[in-house]
Length: 240
Image (tube, rainbow, N blue to C red; front, side, top):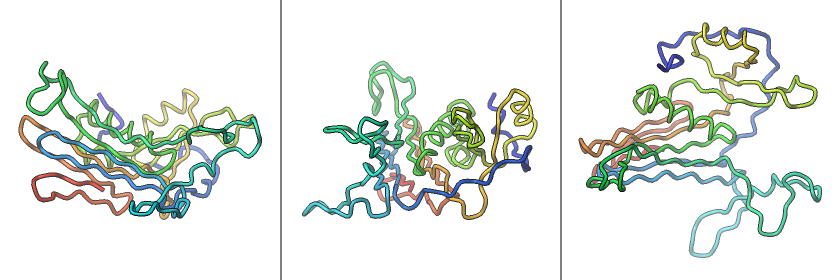
């Protein structure tokens, strides 16, 4: 059973919560997925960190480089301090999922597996949380790709009311069943509803389901931003 993805109910805050922090998400990340009925899948996520990255373009290549090292700690020896050869941390998780299949992989799979879905998201800390929600909604909940993308999401974040900064608070969109939230509150969980008009936080998602047995591709696009799923020449589906 996947109870939170049944008929959705309007949700009013169950307890007073602090005002939402200002959004730090701008136009720094792009995510799209492409798939065809033969099982070829691509999930792409490109993060510039800020809207122009570092504003540098290599001659003849035509793309910008990110400036994600701006998040590095300035104090030597501190967490996240810049060091030689270090890699930047990232929440980008473009995801390809394969399901158990024929031992020989079938016509288009890999041995023992067949292509199932591809998901890509944008939205900083919401990227892995949204990807997780979409994958479990499809696999465990049996939802279509569009239903899974539209389903309400949650993010476990730091509780600013905790003086030592170790307490957790769960940010949620509306439409979660009230009875489930009330039960979780009695267990000690804290929630903050987000999703006011103009608030840009969510992991804007693109997704594709692939059915190689029937030769079908199903795309999904996120209404939280002006995404679209389209069929292109040759039968591939692009979701962005």
